[in-house]
Length: 81
Image 1 (cartoon, rainbow, N blue to C red):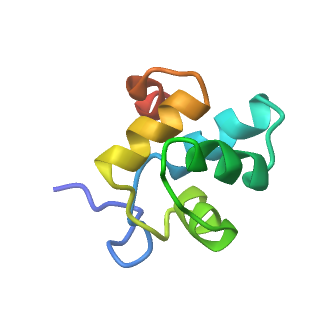
Image 2 (spheres, rainbow, N blue to C red):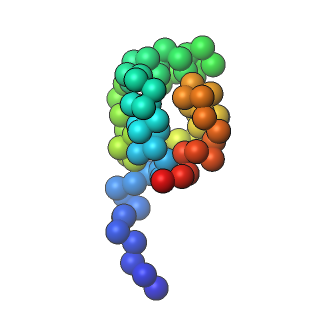
């Protein structure tokens, strides 16, 4: 069996890097994203957004749905390279 280059304790999600990429492509800061998420009653702080983008925090399904709305992408876009 091929050994993974990522260990379980390091990466809590597989979409964080894509969230960051899409956020930057849209010209949004983490604070812009936080403010937009609040409109959907998703309350994350800068530390949480940073942890998600770095793969250090799990992302709940309802958060992923709100992130897709804020970033104006389909959810499956988070899983594409």
